[in-house]
Image (cartoon, rainbow, N blue to C red; front, top):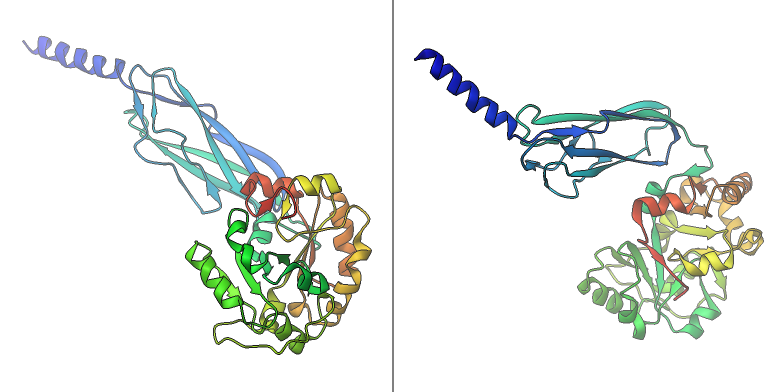
Length: 347
């Protein structure tokens, strides 16, 4: 009788194991070797169900830090089915360190309900004249000039994007959901435009106190292209002072060809071409007399690192301490953010 009971238990266990899901991974550790800080590391682990029944992932994978992400594209695997698990590691902030980041995969595999994967390697520091796509996005500021086109043509802040107030709603489809400073002639229309944008989902809207007239009264022709405004500034209690904007000011210089720029560029980027830096020097050089923390951030971009790196080094040598080349060029922006903050042609 005992042997029959033992045989029955063995048979049941054998049937359960025979019909169970089983998770197999292509590798447990991926070593990316050495990368420069700012390079976005992407690797695909292949997950396969080598069992005989449906495998269910019981939750999304977890990682050991926020710098690593690994979302599953689906939560079940049929027997024999496989999917890629794309692991993405942000190397910004890890310059000079060897890193090991773990990813935990959870499933109803009875033999291995939790599988640990790892991505590892050495992150070399980037150069002092470089910065990462992550930091460009973090510091990104857009000046939105809502005056009419004639007023904008007479004079405007360097790198500002012109969208007349009457056309603002048509621009909602391409304006970035980022920190935006609304600039008008003298502070009279900025509040109205900003409120309209907030109601449409633009959460990070600020108003430049006194508009262009407020800027020129406080800072003169600093970072102004063309003529200054002679209007009398009107200061709103909710507006941000020109000196505050000056400390956060961002100038993006695009050194690619005219065709590449027209196809896609960061909103607010100034097109210079490979040899056009002399165009902006008269507007940027006065900033070199300011303390570094009061200078604008200048981000030089191209499709690689050659021209942008040379430009950033040149600008730093002139005293513009916060001039940087984008590590890895615009491809590093695209691998992180796709076309976010970008437009296909000048609006």
